[in-house]
Image: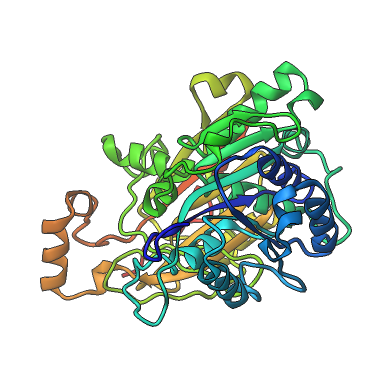
Length: 432
């Protein structure tokens, strides 16, 4: 039994419905040794089935029924967020367990769940919240065949309860925010298809530990007790952020649409809907806004390296001209099907003082207010920002300030020239 002050490690299993999370969970429970494991499961419409499977196949649960905690009638990332935290606290306080496995709902994004777990680590400094656990690993399970179909433009994945855009968006978000990726059901795809799947996954998430599996069989040291999770590191390793960092590291001029971008102060927030997503906070002295709006947005793509064989690549669209809101919304109505992921900063001609973050995942397109441009700040604040951030100073324009459009595109066989031309047609002369 662990000392009271020692934090209990938590592994979070995410992945879309049917990817194999429960199979992996059962495998881990049946084969792990040395841990007293508590399990929290939450899958809308499937929680009772999952509980029965686990209770039947995992001896650890049979020995202590209290180690299985089903969360029903909701999604962990929002409606049951408080319940999840309370359940974790209750399990920790029993003193019976020294590891917690959480199987998240297949229709939930991982970042808000991770934030809830981390709130119980003592790192927030909030004395009213007990420090009982630490997030050890976020494991995303993906169905190899599903990805082949999804990113090849197929529509056979549609679920009667979720439309196509939900599925695509969730797959992308789950791949981006994790530090371990299990490519499951590899026996159901060809060698070439598997290579393409891995190329897509690696482009979306370049740094996570990627493991090929069949029926969830995996080296348990990759799942339990890894001590590998770091929120900031996992967030910053998403493919779109990496591309922006590369963009900023190179010399660039507006309108060239090269492989470059700069990622300034980022900030994490969440919406209170099942489509939880983070907003970027453009400058740290500005306030946040968790509201979504229906503006159009998109990113560019460029193939390179091993991914080039499958037409998978990324690029950055960068201009110092604002978008006409109506023109961009019209473009978004016919968003290129070849674009898998887009995210970045947007400047609109009708709101010169306000910075927006445009985000697209699959067929989901959202655009939210991120704070005012630094150009609206006082001279003292601008000077301080320039001293603290050389990248910010490099991108400062005497007339425009830091106003810009900078979007990362990730996709498959994208027509970069056409996307850039179409976006250019959506811009107008700045009127300051």
